[in-house]
Amino acid sequence: MSVKQDVATWEPSTILMAVFIALTTLAAVVITLGVHAWALVTGVEASWNPFTLVFGLIDGSLDPSGQVAWWIGGVGVFLLVLVVAVVLLVGRRKSGKARRGDEAAQWAGRGRDIEPITERAVAAKAERLGVEGARGFPVGRTVAGDVAVLSSFEDVCITIAGPRTGKTTSWVVPRIFAAPGAVVATSNKRDIVDETRARREQTTGEYAWVFDPQNLAGTTQSWWWNPLSYVTDYVQAGALADMFLSAEDASNKDGNDMWDRWSCQLIAPMLLAAAKSGRPITALHEWLSDQTNDEAVLVLRALASETKDEYLKEDFKKAATSLEGFMGMPVETRGSVYGGAVRIMHFLNNTRLMRWVTPSEELPEFKPEDFVRTHETLYCLSQEGRGSATQIVTPLTVAVVEAATAYATTQAGGRLKTPMLIELDEAANVCRWNELPNQYSHFGSRGLCVDTVLQSWSQGERVWGEKGMKALWSAANLKVYGGGVSEPEFLRNVSELIGVHWVDSTQVSSSSSGRSYSTSKASQQRPIATVSDLQALPQGRAWVFASGAVATLVRLIPFWEQPSLETK
Image (cartoon, rainbow, N blue to C red; front, side, top):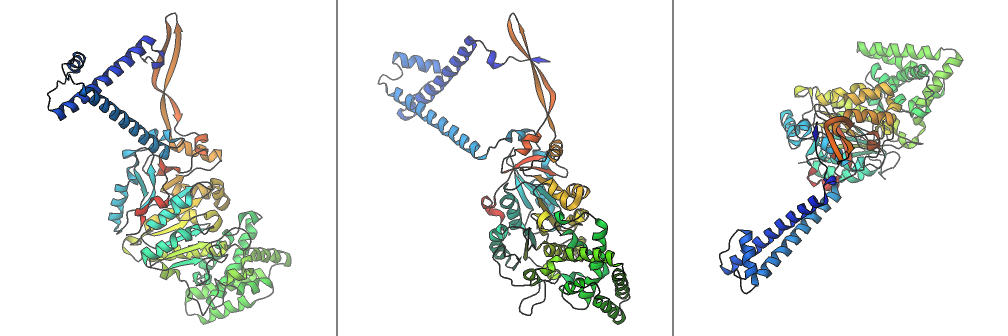
């Protein structure tokens, strides 16, 4: 227990004495500097004792002409102007950078607490991985200390921030600019294409593919991709059917998983039949429209008799048998299964979208296995609502990710020599991949730097469920909360991750001699950032949580303030 007298309780005489001492000291400094400036010019020797100088000025022995008074006044004015300029400069810098809530930074991670995400540590990791011409991906700069924070080429990230919080300008765009290799970026807006396409093509010297069936970026179709190229066997056919299901808007699902699973099991054999017989994906429209159409069964039987690959032969036989089983179900049950399959594959009715996924003799075909060996860029655009392209964006993104993973296994250490950035902006709306949480932890070791950007925790739960969202959050090496979320439970969890700090407890007691204050040092715990603080986090601020580092408050930097982000 220690007792400290508060300044507010000082007696008036004490305050006057303090003011007198301060003014006297200031006057002595001004007189001493002014006299010595005059002495330097005139060649006169002057004492450094302020009392001697004051007496010399009073009796006129120091300078009978009185010129020294002007020098003293000039020095006083100069010091006043200097102090005002410094105050204005500091005030301007603080007003330009300071934000409400920045005081929390004094208790947040800094220095050695955030060593794993500092520029030096991230650059050292890039050198160890053999990545040339790049250090890592920018995150921001700490509010306390103005230290650059980056994620490494082994990190997978997740960002949760509400609308209009600067996610695109301060996160997505800067990281695309910093990417040393190929980039896949999803979005429901055209801004990332407008801001990064020309610069990416200029710095890499390679092509940028834009998948834009809804004409969000005003892009004319210049290529096509065959989703059935993903189907190499029965397992892959089932995976593609699952992707079509997971890409469907969750709000349209009836919640009956059994029927959805059966519908996917009906779709998978048809996908295999179409893929291995050279038919386009639109063939499924005809097969699903007529529950008695057994063409897919006949195709599978024929493929089984023709192939010399024993594994594929078994796949074809099993697929044909499964498809016959569904067609032989009671009418009511079969109708429900087919109805679910038609709902999942409803995008086949979108003629504009189908032009992007059916063969064209005039346009080049996009091949994921070739793309992952380049420094090219793939933009996948889709907007929610009628005509959405999410059912194709999801498998297209997954096809590239899996092609990159397969390519990584052929390289030293089982990872891409030049890391690839997978920027899943608006992931819950554009790229609903149900296997993403399960795969997340493996990407970093393969050289795939995956970023998942969401508007809220509940948005992620809507796509991946509670367990899936928790798995995704836990698997991320670097987590960012950028404000704009009003979900108390999520914000409480974030507050707990940030931690607490100790504060002094002050007690006031009164007696006949007046009031006294006693202060107990660091006796109470308080959250560094409360739920209300996090809900009201200003734009341009974000809390960063990284493996092996203490939570830190950072200042997000818009891409136009980061001219050094050009790929070297």
